[in-house]
Amino acid sequence: MAIKKIKTAIFISGRGSNLKSLINYSRKKKSKIKIFLIVSNNSKAEGLKLSKKHKIKKMIVDFKNQKMAENKIIKELNSQNIKLICLAGFMKILSKKFINKFKHPILNIHPSLLPKYKGLNTHKRILQNKEKYTGCTVHYVNEKLDSGKIILQKKIKIFKKDNLKKISDKVLKIEHAIYPEAIEKILN
View: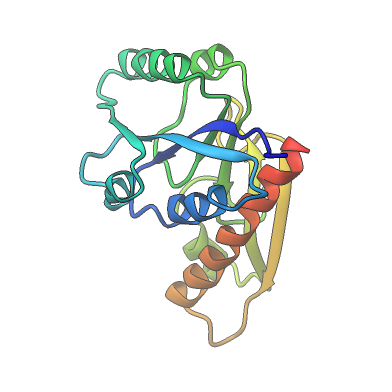
């Protein structure tokens, strides 16, 4: 019997490497999601090319007026019957109103071991503070930045020879593995 897949939207702002990873995951037989929509606040986001390649509807929204942008997105999510949002490098903070209007899970992936290092430039701050470990966190989105309930974390060791690029690459690699795991966990 085929698994009924949850209609999912992925929100991006950049290169879309987590989007690509989630598309690959969604194509697996045992996957619990089907990606119906890619939303971006950046018309030049590299990840938008994946919408054409994989025949997934895309929506580019200008966030100059956040209230209008979010209303437009909510309308589209409802019309598509979307039941899950995955933020994947989406560089806008969704309002409390948006989060409350969308009555389904909104997930985010963050490149640190939350609650440490919320916000931007995490790898740089981690190196400056001479941390021994870093990693990534998948969490529920709430109205506070990177503060929602943690679903899953993966930790990696930082070596003396690691620089910003090495840490960034290592963390991104585990992000690609952990995001599908977190989705599986919440949908079981």
